Image 1 (cartoon, rainbow, N blue to C red):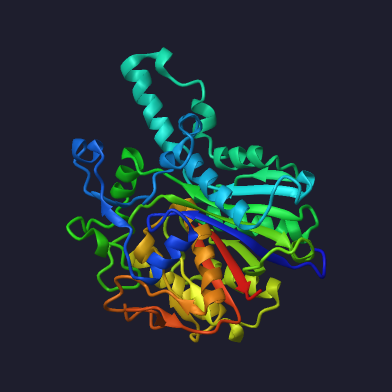
Image 2 (cartoon, rainbow, N blue to C red):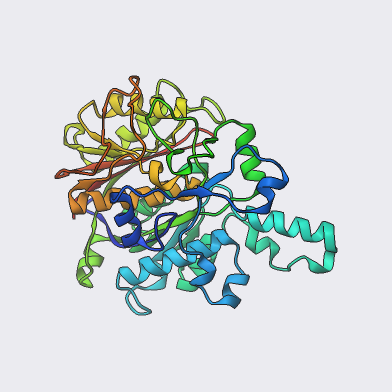
Length: 411
């Protein structure tokens, strides 16, 4: 890594179950709103699925994108394009602000074009080959979101698509950090996108018994750290950050939200779906993010947790936090309101972390009524908490034992 280089955030974009952009999502999160609602898809009743709720987008991307463009994109690609355009505009970039050979795009996804795959499979079976779209492969491939954004921005330093399950979006941001620190790029558009609320993913997660079945109270189904939690709620959306080398951003007069001070990655080497209950791999990622950012654990005032509302995962994360940082930071878990956006989760929650530092406020963990005694840390509940933050960490973990931690500091 090159010395003396700092990575800053100059643009943010998002479309989530709480809002069609960053501001509306942030406001809804602080207001204690839930993005979870009953699913109305016909396949829910057709297959008598035990899970009948999901965290669905407030603003349909097909209402934002031109109709012809939207039809050529899978839903995961649609949300990536929407959020990336927001972030690019927010950063104040145009055609002449950056050499395209110094611009990279890195957008992760956990599943890819599941909706396209299942839709085209149905068409092939029911109506034959002639009805299958020639764009099927570009629409279903996991690198589709990154590829479409990269083509639109004419990025030539690199276009990458990490697929690390629920850590994908955070890993994309970590990858962007590395590209800037190594001198490969001046600007990186990084984040995650996911849209797989369809029959097979819902059925598969249901069979794995990882999802909440609190169908009668959708808005209370996702409840990280609560004693009554019974699984996550599947969500969809995208979160995108524009990362820049500080000198480059300042030279063009860009506003700066904050600094991505350090990143850490690791792997559990433990189980395909379950986290290591001792939090060894997770704690290593968190500690690495602090080391790379030159941050003392005592200076970390807040951890934005991955906590998905599963009985095992939430506790394992707190074990890791205690090992890497201690018991002093204030915790929150946005998935109580947002649901679990899978490959987009880490990116959206990284945005929330940056805004917490900027505004000096940590959102409450929605539906946290009775804190699990095994957690025994300071988790914000009930209402947001005002707090000045010198450093904050965002955790993201994924099936397969993928661990990513992002350490942020003020601008």
